[in-house]
Image (tube, rainbow, N blue to C red; front, top):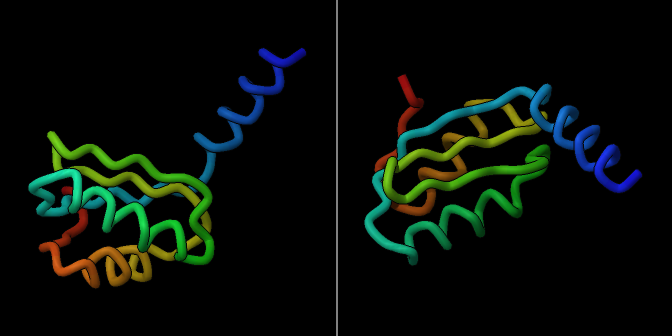
Length: 82
């Protein structure tokens, strides 16, 4: 039952709209700053921050523009992943 619930939850998360950003992060402090602003943004259900790839994937109902604007407020160069 627990495994089934986890799989179901993961399937729900993967169906949510995603916003993928390239963020000029240099260290774990940068990662922490990005996580802090995303954690406060309404409509964000989950996110993954990858320092090595400088990639941030955000899932939820927040608009791509709102996500980009919020992450850019960290002072890091931020753009949509192309």
